[in-house]
Picture 1 (tube, one colour):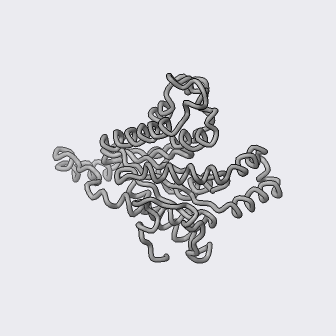
Picture 2: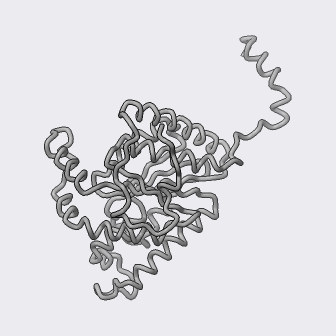
Picture 3: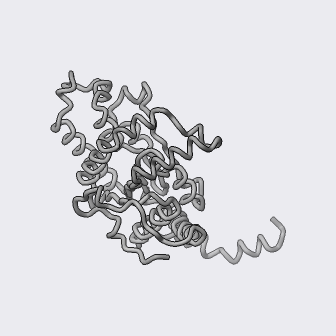
Length: 293
């Protein structure tokens, strides 16, 4: 596997997305898949320890433009996980119930319990991305003091970024490990993937005419992503920018980042048997081996 440096992907200072590569060459597809399987099993072993340790929760946030490869990445990276310890949430347009609460409510109730992983496929950041490109959506939130588009101004967005930072700080202080990933796709590669959706019958169902409408707003989305990443990448909730033009490479980079970050929690260990049970282990073994029970 290629030499890996976490600092190449972690956002610790302001970034300009147009200067960040969307493609890296880590080798042949077959080798990438083998390396991903090996790394994925190591991360899955950490998951099992965390499940038993029952002190930390892990929140994995995944953002990216349409066709960035979010769904297939989740399928391939997490396939070795114990299903009882991981839940995937795909956040779509808010329901009527969700619109009756603040925008973070549906994310709060989906947070992982201690010992478990939650994957947010699209996240609370949609509320400073889609709504910023389409600020008219904010009017549908029925917020106090927001009466017209003029009220959805720079102060409004600054306040929303502060709310998100506070949300993440609160859950981190209470035991949730937060890792946020932006799958950085080029506009040319998105075009190629949309064309494949149209050309392959088994992919047609993924295509929507709305994809093309949003593609016309590419530059606006890139600016909003850049601003959101720069304003919310913090030591307790860092962003990682993963070059996404090549899916096998993106998956391996993503998994390797998780492995490096989760390996830092040296206190995570399987719990020890209580002294009473431990003192009778030989007796229990004999009972089982005797065939009497």
